[in-house]
Length: 87
Length: 87
Picture 1 (cartoon, rainbow over the protein chains, first blue to last red):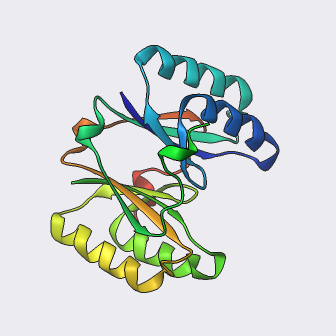
Picture 2: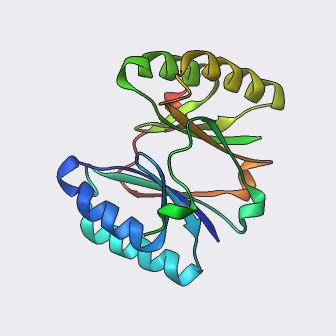
């Protein structure tokens, strides 16, 4: 599946959130990651994120589609992330 | 079409970017908007954003799908925005 992930987490937890996201997705822009995952990888990612956030304050939203073909991504202005940013 | 918009723009231009996004979409989370637009509204939004950003520094990415049915949105942790935030 194709995954877009946006996070709004407290600064002190950002390093752990970033580290977790980077394991599975590539960075697109400030607080945005995207990538293709299997269902099992997606479950592992959400499980890992649940373990590092404070669910009363932090928020992470994922948008998933069965295939990247279903979503068109368009950049206005500067292109920040890219496939080369897969860590 | 269903539109997810994420912006990474300089602080001094954020108010204009926010104002433009709020005309067309509803706020989801820090630097994220989403909503359903016609093709004409989407063109008007991107045109308006191009007029307020500095394309050498600012970046806005839109993800569009023909229908919201093609995308599943899942929140981990706190739900921040919602339909009530349409301005």
